[in-house]
Length: 137
Length: 310
Ligand code: SF4
Image (cartoon, rainbow over all chains, first blue to last red):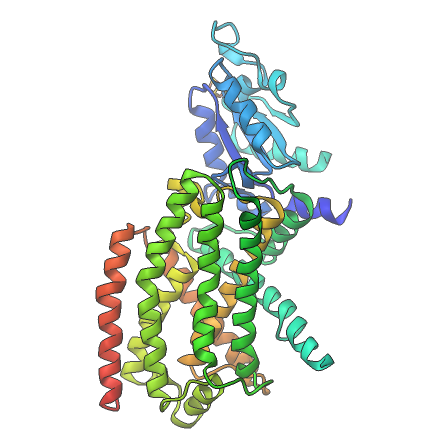
């Protein structure tokens, strides 16, 4: 593992994109940053601007209105950027997959590096997913 | 000549200042985590952040921005922070006598990072960045007068000398300035000033993450943001060191004094971290009122006390 890669993995800044979700996954993501789970142990912080992001967390189903916004965010992000699809909605569309506004799961729109299934996934599962991502690279 | 280069680049120059600033920022994050009952990132987390931004990330130039100004601003911010650091530390550690008037030059140099943040933000062509820049501008207007009055009071207290090494010498002779009532008042005002200069929580409206998404820095990425981060780390070390020099009896490298110096600087950092973690963000007009009325009043009382010899 090169030095560059090591620094990158030690300091991942997260940007949270909530699609048309039921809002439960959003809360579970925020749970990861609370004192009990404390993702900042691994150097991860939530940032407010996509220009600072290293990881794009996408949750919720992506409908026709979200799609151009998600694409725009992905294009505006400084590379390299990792994308994590969170929840059943992010991975496959979940219960919204049959809806008539549904515009495809996340990986039809942008390349996804890790999937965290669950409805909603527990904070432990999200942390495990991110750790998986770190070990994969 | 070679010795000068060594001073400027290694100790107490570029490398030392950056490493100390990074460690102090890590200390600040660790204390913040402990206050919130978390474990917190490792102490050297700021270095990972900096190296990641510098080596790995791509630098994006906003489409509607002015390229040269946008990219030059972080370089000037870093240079201004570094020069003020050298001007404080070289006489502070006694490597060089300094020159007459260096405390005033330091005052101007310490403003440069904030000014360049404003210029860079306005060059980014982003409305949120403009909001951040305008708030930063108002903040500078409010705390700069207080800061200048503090320096004036210190000059008065040190017997009308405008040279850093003489100010330290005066404190060696009469004891640290903070030991007197006027010195204590000056210290309180100075801590709030550096809080605002560093953009920490009661006065972080210029980069309010939850409100305007990092405001002035919203468009920065990659190397440019790395330089801004570095300037911020340097300021995090330099401003407490400056307080130690002008009010807490100076910094020194002789024997056991090193320990005292480190403790003093860490004490000031601890104080600003505690203030930052126990206060909400104030509005810009509240901050202006706070500095214009209350802090200026405090410093003026201190100046009057100094004139009476207290
Ligand atoms: S995966 Fe489940 S919990 Fe998450 S947004 Fe979809 S429906 Fe809600």
